Image (cartoon, rainbow, N blue to C red):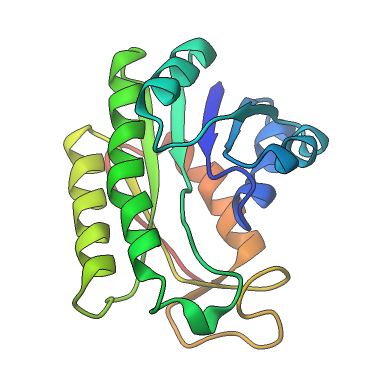
Length: 193
């Protein structure tokens, strides 16, 4: 299949690409960072340089790639976990506006199947929780699949040294389960240890 992976250079995206390629899929890896295109090529994806907040450019990028599946792994999280609350608005925006732009781009390119990252734990009331709820509603309304991941742990995550509280999932297991979820029917898939 042709898979348009948004958030390709993120911690999970980097682990998903080689697994998709090994399974025989062609991956278009979306990034907004020009310095990440070489990494995506090295991992086996065709780099697609575009910002999800540039709606028209994103619509064109998805149309040009002609995906069978749009895989939304978009987040905007700080490198330092201590700043998550302080910068929560950035992640909320990418989950709402960025995801809506991606859904619209998918619709205009023939409505490929959509899978999108969510969380398997209850977020405290606020912009992030509202954004997750909106993202899930939007994806399910398109007949898509919501991937509710536990908290990631393992190399490159916030929890490199020690697993976090449950629900949790090792980052490599999360990537494996994501590839397996490509065949899921519409609904919610819980990805935890």
